[in-house]
Amino acid sequence: MPTWVSSYVTREIMLLEFSSSIMCLILSGKVGSNIASELGTMRTTQQIDALEIMGVNSASFLILPKNSRISDNDSSACHF
Image (tube, rainbow, N blue to C red; front, side):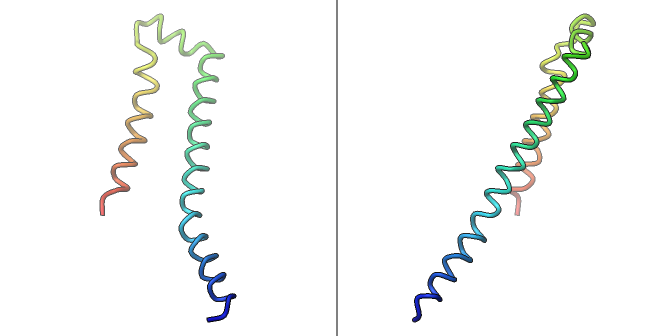
């Protein structure tokens, strides 16, 4: 077997296996930074302070739905 065949097969396997993992890492970073920027914008425009004044627990009101939505998407992706 020529050496270029084994190197070609190795390259293809690496691309197929690691490309999805790298894309997941990029996507999770993007989602996390979007959530953080949204919360930062809400803090600077005093929307979070308004929630606290109304007596709403801002952490459970703003963060819990996003985390539950992310975990729901993760669990639905695992079903075959």
